[in-house]
View: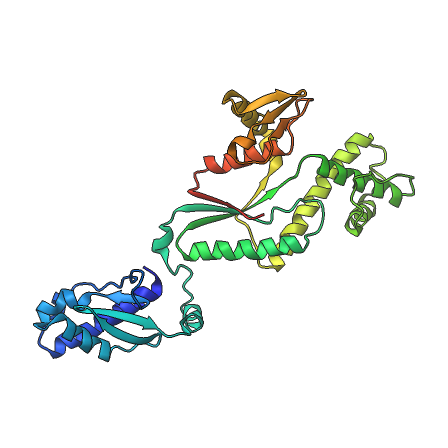
Length: 337
């Protein structure tokens, strides 16, 4: 039962308590009052059959008792009450009740308005999940607003909500990020270097390289290039994650958990989920690659799971991540893309 439904039901019960006291009826004998949603074809926002239940206590016909209550009832969000059938009361809310309800909710500062809806069932909401390779864009902002509002709404409805941001901190995009920082670092030191073809050309990359030079000078020039790129990868990813968190915090969006793809690889879960799918018969071999039969589940085409080299595609860690979600015991999993 919604909060407004409960409130109006209690107001009606208090009216019957007053009526009972004025007519010599023991108010302690009155049962609880609940409001129902009228069935299709019946007018009204709520309906009460209470007069039928208490008419014997009042020693009156139910319809007569319903008429007294309908005439006396007052509530700021109720426009009118009508008596129907042998003693039902159909309740009509004022037309503007949604707008009038908002300030009342805000005044209560109640963060859990309808806890009985969710019943503390666990829900995981993943949203934004921006790649840690550059600034947020307008699409991320839209997802952040939508996701944050949904988390708040589910929490108010009584669900035990966890919010999560997934970080793709592995793969070619991250390697190209590190190579881009490396090229800008060399250029800042006057060393000729070409940006990678799939590199990141934003000002943020040059600014990061400039800070590295300012703080450490040319101390990394002596490192073998692969070691230098590995170092810059850690620095760049760390900075990009911090920038993501800072920008989202300014937008009043915060996550309960930041989940890293790299953790899945380190725990061996990516290859494990591939083996599990192979053992279950959901894959086949074609052109040297391992394919997942996603068309069995409504996809428009099957997807490559493992390349000819045996390395997983981007699809594999996504599967491992969602298996991890399921293993964490959520009743409902929501992705906002």
